[in-house]
Length: 538
Image 1 (tube, rainbow, N blue to C red):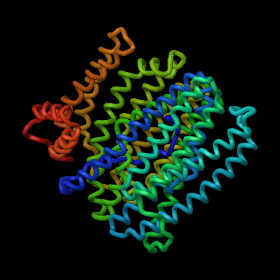
Image 2 (cartoon, rainbow, N blue to C red):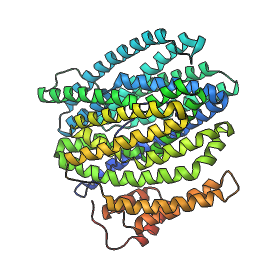
Image 3 (cartoon, rainbow, N blue to C red):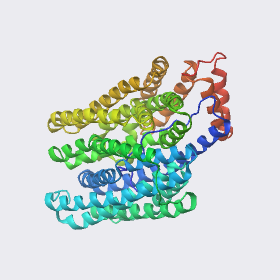
Image 4 (cartoon, helix red, strand yellow):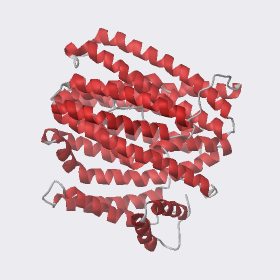
């Protein structure tokens, strides 16, 4: 459905890059998975962005803020319903398959599926009780219909998320990818029709619920076609003990993280500022999440299962090699997100959403830069999950949540939207700093600071050049030239500063060959810049 949908992050992420000792067939298998997830997500995000634009233009800033609040609430309830179950499913199923135990994987799927049904029932029951006690003013006289629609949407999307996590653990990415695209295509005419008929916020919430239900049903059909079925049965005691501990720690982590993931900012904005400010912050979150998905979702959605399978086969040292590769790829992607965000945001927002949403531009620029530069935290989170360092992640999340609450209470009431962005920034920096600290305690490897610094300098030059070109072109489409200049500086520059290893370059060559003549032409150009003396793999 809408890009405003705050699904639980498919968190941790992959650079499905494999070390030098991995067989070629395994590298191609990983590349295929990345391609499936990436293409589907690009289509899904494009459709979701169209939904967001039509809805925002149809409702206006204030009503769109009320819609955004409802979708945010659905996302938070989904996180509470699934808590540790999705991450634990992916990790332990992939690990069991990596150890050659498909029967155990099927038993884990069944048990965690039962837990998910119970969890969703409890969460939605508490939601209904809380709703009729608090009676949110955003819904006014629409309390009953909105409550029913939220229940339908949350139950459907939480079930979809659980089934997708099980399929991901089996390294089957097709069901989720196909279901997301089909549901988006089916929902598009509903959104456009409602906008053209000038329908109100209730209609768009109803469409969201219908799209969530459609997504769930399509995914269930595809799961039966592509994946191994659930099978009731015992789980070995050693695995059951680890699974139980992982569920407790990850459950605490996810629930705490649900408050940290813009929840406090949205709640305080809704309480002390305006519905329009909530809408602006929601647009910033939507475009930022979309940019991150656009550039890194293939890495993101496949890292956890592949790293977990590697851990099950070879242990922590092999998983640490995945992390080293992932960090460098995340940093390169993150700089591109930050730079292009600064270059394109002003023109893109006015083109897509109209002049009524100009006030959202500074918030969007800030969140894009922060999300890009702090993207490397995704790889660290994946590593901590795989090697059972969830206690470290709980400590990180608790401290970051406290920082989030303090910053929000201090900054948002007096500063509104600006305070929300500053709160977001402070929380993300706290989170990453602690993640790096605990990573250094858990492994001997460190971040490739020298390489990262050289690429950062290239990114600064590319961004400054592209920004200057864009602002001097008297057209709302000037950002197109800016993007082209950024790419022309950033890609060759990354090669000239020797950021990529020989293995990286071979993988990029494989990708380039699959893109046909344009990809091969690009790789030939970059190959001429590549020095014969390659830097060692970090």
